[in-house]
Length: 493
View 1 (cartoon, rainbow, N blue to C red):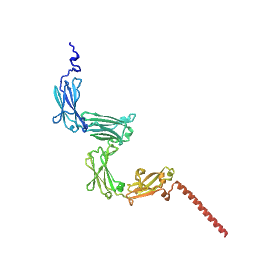
View 2 (spheres, rainbow, N blue to C red):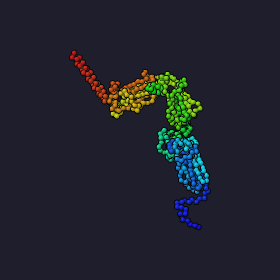
View 3 (cartoon, rainbow, N blue to C red):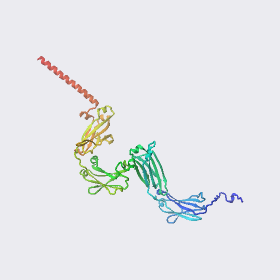
View 4 (cartoon, rainbow, N blue to C red):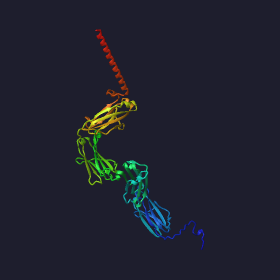
């Protein structure tokens, strides 16, 4: 056996002994991930060479016209595998505009040349799908009385994705556990999230929503106890509700707003709503944002505006609803309905009670509107002739006052300070109703008119009582004096 000094091999030379047989590389493209953003420079492409031996490989890149590329190329050192073969990679950086083309990566090896086609963008092969599952009822039997709603999304084309949970339309920030997005190979990414809910909230039919948003996908799914039972709690078929204009819009804006509400939609995708006149002429229709119903489905309001005079004279308007879930379009007609036994309201205004003013804290002015039909009206308050913000007063909805004849009443209360009342400010209740002679009427009150109308505050009431008592004694004294004088004169005679 012969021994050789280190210099025989050359200092720094690495010798690898392997039983693997020499082989050409297997070549694979390293393209952009599914849904990657290719709008920003640079875009990186890669090429992977596997299981080659010996460790001698040369990479080259060509464009779609077979022209050689020399710029933007990187070659990374080879890596020895456990099987005794090597793996190596190369990277090509191109601009976003160039990234729409096809490129070719070649690997030259002593045992052969390999070439592979590299495309910057690999489109998603499957459409994303989203599901939401109700809580398991047996989990509610556990001591904490909670269970979990599960929301999952498959085939996402982008790892940059946000998931939110909502309860009755308000975002939830606790009780959430989310996994992912996790790569699922050629099918993009999978995202799963759980929301813990209480048995009390679930049984009270709270609506929970899972909202997912990414660059190429956006959707929301709703679930509730009512929705879980197949919509038995409310009608499940798509329907429409026609809402006539209110009197306030007609009087103030001189126009009538017609509303067509589409309800019980599983999805609003493909929804189209058209308002039309009697002659079939289409009106400009505005479709609002979708809203979540208690059964987990959606509703949408579609509105149009027509002249108040046209509405008042009884013109007909038709709402047509088109939706993928409908075999035929839904059509409903809206017109002003005549009112029998119509009656203009009587309006009364009341000052703050003396007992309340005595506390010197607040003052409540009340407006009573009674004996009117139809029930549609509006109430507004003014201070010194200037309209007040609606947040300063509270008005009730019309309440049935009698059935024979059918009449309604309503009232409104204005909250002011005791100082504002005693300062002598005037407060006006303005009422609008279609049967009033000028469609509006008003009643005004202030501290001074209260006394003239027979109302008085605590101090004035005490003064009035004192004056009444004194007047009585004066009258009795005068009568007594007159009686005594008369008797004396008779006796003298």
